[in-house]
Image 1 (tube, rainbow, N blue to C red):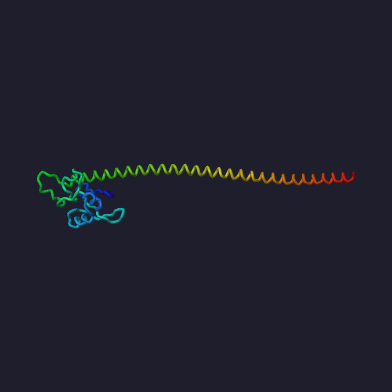
Image 2 (cartoon, rainbow, N blue to C red):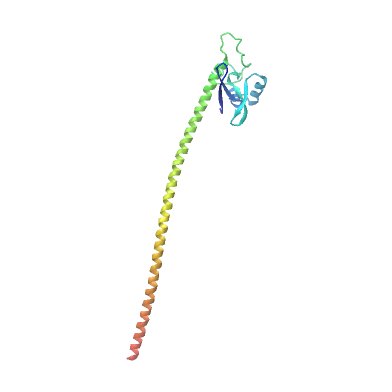
Length: 191
């Protein structure tokens, strides 16, 4: 159930209210039927604000449920409205039992929602922790990449320097070799 409100009336009695949709679910009828009962005055309600805008809030005690259906696990509309049971001797007003059972049902629903929310919170916390670990890993990889780039640039500079030295030595060896050939040719020619 989405919304349960409670008001303290002038007499100091707490009055539980539910939405039309919740009343229809509780009574196992359509929302249209609940609206008809409200219009006919068989249930009490008030117009109020909800998170979705203006809506009707039904007084749970005035919802005419069939006697004994709560105990049997079935809920359905009964005959009459508020005060229909007053003429019977020795019977309690059924609305009081319905309020208690309705509130227990709502409490069980809230507990289920709470448990689902706690489970979802646990999943979200685990996902957040995993996200933090991945962010830390990404930062360490970025730092490692920066270090590797620096080392690669250093090695590229060394390779360039070695190529320059090799180039000069190759030229030097070539010039010396050519000089030796010329000298050998001159010696051979003079002899």
